[in-house]
Image 1: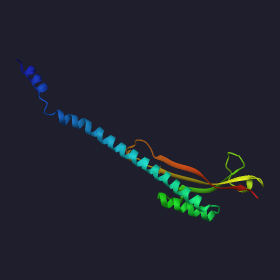
Image 2: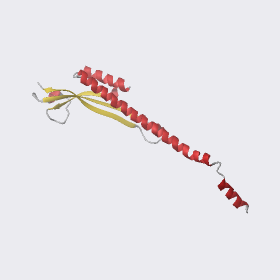
Image 3: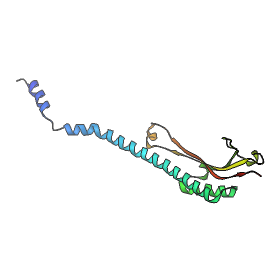
Image 4: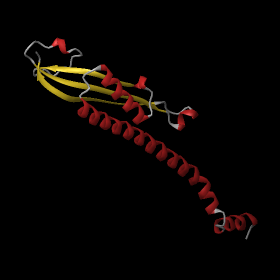
Length: 158
């Protein structure tokens, strides 16, 4: 038997380093999968927090009828405290629908006298999520937002 043949047969039969090589190949891939799963779960959790804040805003709006700017500012402060966001990223404003119209207007005076007026509060929350991988030049910031119109009153305009 020649030396080359003996050497080749010996390497094929020796499996002592296989586990180390497989680990070196698979471990980085598993770390990247774990990091991606963590980032996605953080993103989903943040969107859940925003939706939860919307539910709080809806509960407060239905309990207090925010028909003045002072009440709307208070509602905005509650949403800001609930999300931990600055008030500049939260919009709380009045909106109205006249009769059976499907479009919202910003002033109740737009509706005619005697019209059925539906009074809403528009709550919009915007946020952004910066995934870890953007530090490595992959991807970009992800914009999060939620908007809800909350009906708190209906009646005829006088």
